Image 1 (spheres, rainbow, N blue to C red):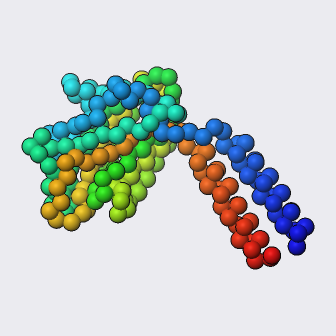
Image 2 (cartoon, rainbow, N blue to C red):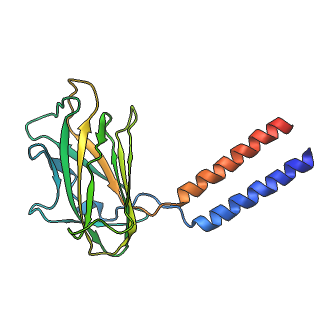
Image 3 (cartoon, one colour):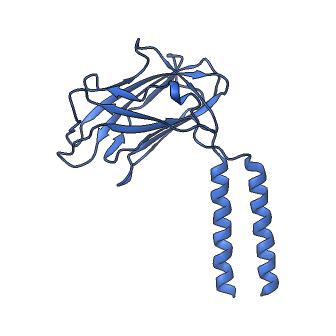
Length: 213
C-alpha cells in the first residue's frame, strides 16, 4: 500500500508540475490606466452611457497586473428604486489603448438582484462583431449579480468597441439602490484554470489515499 501511495504522489506531482509549467505566469484583472478612467455614470433616462463627455470612446489599457475597473451607475434624482423585471439599457464606447491586444472582456455586476438580459451586441470599429466571438451570460447569486464574458480573436490597439446590452432587475419590490456597481476588465486567462485542475488532482489523490489506507 505504501508503494502505491508513493506512485500516486509521483504521478500527481508530475502532472501538476507539467500543468504549472505550461500555464505561464498567473494573471490578475487587467486595467492599467484606472486613475484616468471615469467611475460614476448618471442615468440619462432609461439607461446609462459609458463614453467620454463628448460621446466618444474611452481608452482602456490592458495590464495583466492591473485591477478591475469598477463603475457606479446612479440616478441624478436620487436612489434607484426599480420594479421587478424593469430593464435599463447600457451602451459603452471603448478604445483598446496601447500596447497590448485584447482577446476578451468581462462585465461583472457586483450589486445583487441584477442580471444581464440576452440582448447583447458588441461591434468592432462600429461595423461588425469581432471574429471568433462567443458570449457567456452567467446568472448571479444571492450576493452577486450576473456576469457577461466576451471572447474573440485578438484585437489590436486602436480598435473601437461598441457594446450594447441591458440590465434587468430581478430582486424584490421596493428596494432602493444608491447605485449599481459593475466591474469590468480584459485579461488573458488560463493560469487559473490550470491551478483548478491541479487542485482537483490533489483532492482526488487524497480521497483515494483515504480509501486505500
